[in-house]
Length: 213
Image (cartoon, rainbow, N blue to C red; front, side):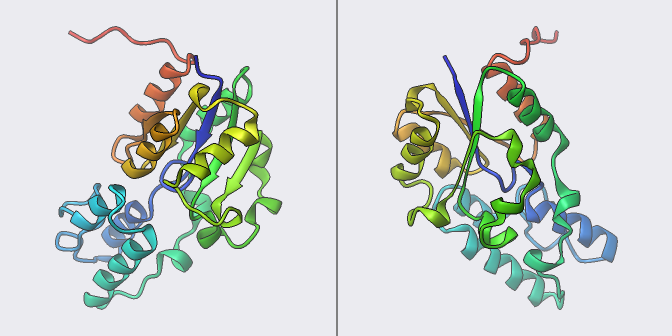
């Protein structure tokens, strides 16, 4: 039985920055056929895989990508040069609103939103009304996948970890949730619609479709 949904933000609520870079590169004539840019691009990106496995942090991966762009003479900073309000995933936000209208509770547990959105961003963030709690780990002193982050999330909802499901696009963070007894749902940035459909099915807000064929 699932009673609470715990969301990561980056890559789940909005498109991952490498996705946006691929679009920008296509429009601006960048050589994206030779620049590794996450799992959506035409070139394998082993550093993205290392990040999702927890071998490097996202800040280190961001620096790797900046270096790749600089090596091609490209001046573009994902932190400053992306119009993030226009990069939201509609399928995720539809699910958030559906959960908000249900008997389930939901919250945010994010590692890096302060880096992208500024300090204490949640105080002026209008969509906060859809969530029953929010934890930016900048206020905790430890980051996912540290067990205390997930335990703090369950405590904020007054829920047992066993009735929480955690959604993240990083394998290492999903494993961290499982280590404290939460269920996890790995969100794929290459298949966002399918990821959300499966999540809604798991939490009982979408009927399972019969297999095709």
